[in-house]
Image 1 (tube, one colour):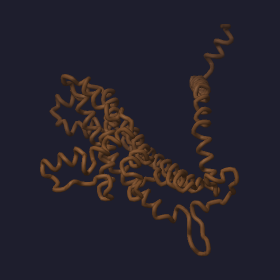
Image 2: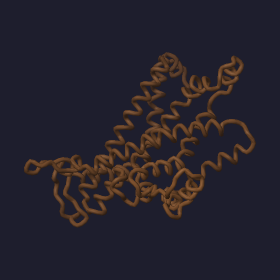
Image 3: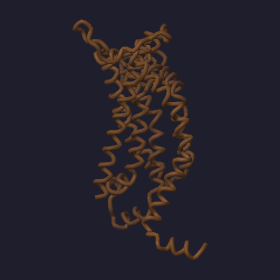
Image 4: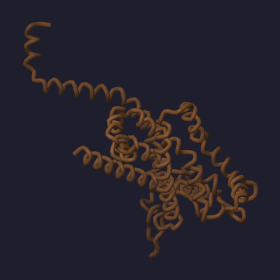
Amino acid sequence: MSEAVAQSLAATPARARASSLTRSRVRAAWTFIAPTLIVLALIAGWPLARTIWFSFTDATLNNLGDYKFIGFENYLANYDGEWLGILTDPSWWHAVWNTVWFTLVSVSIETVLGIVMALILNAAFPGRGIMRAVILIPWAIPTVVSAKMWNWMLHDQFGVINDMLLKIGLISAPVTWTANPDTALLAVVMVDVWKTTPFMALLVLAALQMLPGDIYEAAKVDGVHPVRVFFRVTLPLIRPALLVAVIFRALDALRVFDLIYVLTSNSRDTASMSVYARQQLVDFQEVGLGSAASTLIFLIIALLVVITIAAGRVRFSEDVR
């Protein structure tokens, strides 16, 4: 390196050099991530764009080659003073309510149980490694297999659940858990909690493993109660990981299809938004209406994710201050 170049570099402000390095890193990052973004655009972006487009057409499975643009009529339209479209369909709003109720209840229970399981698995005890592997078995079983297995267990005549409850005297007659609208969604929530709680526990456990141990040693020396340590130390530290886990589970729950479809036999009383979209697309062969329902599902999920992330950032900034 010549003396003139060395003097020039020495004269360059540190802030300018840092800015140049940042720009270089950003360019390198975009270079590495560009192929992934292109693949995602082809695999996910193009089908999503086609679905949104079909939602503005009168396409059916019989006229996919000869459909026309009809605007927002699949969503909301007025024909001779009568409002029609998905947004006026009581079945759609019932499916929205079922999905939201299922998401709130199942994710809440799974979050609480997942934290409890993670705290237990984070403690030192004999056989902890085996226990960590065992709890992942429900999560590893395919959802359809889990649903069919629980469907037989909840059967009113041959199920072991009714047989066990009858023997201990909690019920006086067999209960049709998945056929009765009053208990069907509760049964779906129970199966979903059984299957997905290990996923929540795994994510929370990963966050607990990253926490520094000296904090807990200091709290133990000071005689702070473990419950207070959890709410004042552990919970704030794992909140970012917990937020990610809740978002992932909420995304899964909001688009639930296979669990409800298998357990409740495509019942309108327990239909989720995805089941409703499938009914329009497959049962009624209305590609336009099915695409409109799918587009609304995408918009609802995207809106809830944005709100959750924004609320989490506000809470994080308040904690920092």
